[in-house]
Length: 437
Image 1 (cartoon, rainbow, N blue to C red):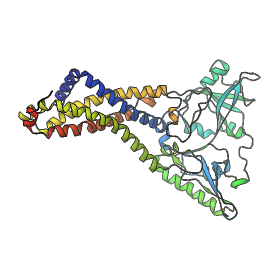
Image 2: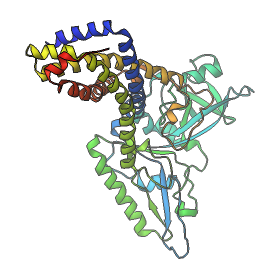
Image 3: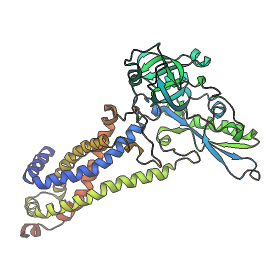
Image 4: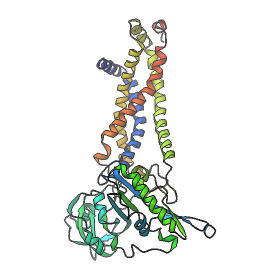
């Protein structure tokens, strides 16, 4: 029966090419906007190279310090974590599988004594960083624990940076200058797309090679500093609550003995879906508000085209009243006729869904330099030499196609159910004797 419905639907599409084309295009435009949002969310939250452990990750990056004596100090301060804060609040944790601290920066890289300077994005990391994130080494290896503890000036660079500076990716053991200081190259990794916010860089080195990286500042208890991220890799997502409780206990102990300033992590550490919405250092994201806004946005993106398509379906059903009357006269039930019309409409919305998916890829392709900032409260500029590349795993996956199917079904029901219901309510005699101009 279902096969017969699809055959009849295909014949109707061929007979009404103009209507079908407009319907498919209208569906595609509505669905493409939803698909862009779905793909962007997938890129930011799914396990993608080299961030394959996002589903087990927790993040912390900011801290707020409030005065103990509010009569003396009337304000709070917030900013990035200091090394002292990471050492006191996160490094002693026992529940996580791995703990890593990262600082970020940028400077010029070049061949020794060469005036051809390349401005590169850098990350200062520890050895656990290479165990949390699965980089693909083309040659060499990460720096060792001995290199890290000794604070040696060693680096890992990307393939593109190696070719840019040396003209070749076979550079392990050679030296380059970064910030006009010599560094020995330990390894070369496959390039990271700029969309990978936690790992994108062109050069990585031990943060122990930074002078005074662990210096404790006297202001605000020394808890505000230059740490960009603290990464916590859980054994499984079920450990998240235990890790958060352990962190909260460390904060409670710190505040219990604080004499000047109390610490507040504002709900951190965050899981991936929350961390991508944490923009400011003095407040955390309101996830309930964000989810409501996203649901309303998706609803509106589907509702507007659905209303237009519903009007088209109403016109089409009025023209088919005679056909519906004849079929009811020969014993066809309302449920059978409803199923047929919904199946016909599903074929059209399915074609529109596929067209919408392709259109969403075109939108991402032509807006990739800025579309990742959509939804943020600020925009970021693309670093020199950075490339915004979308890999196949970012764009093609079962989750995305499942969303397409769900959106098509919703669009189908919204645009067809009411016109079908109104048309089939008419009596058989009214359907048979309606005259059309």
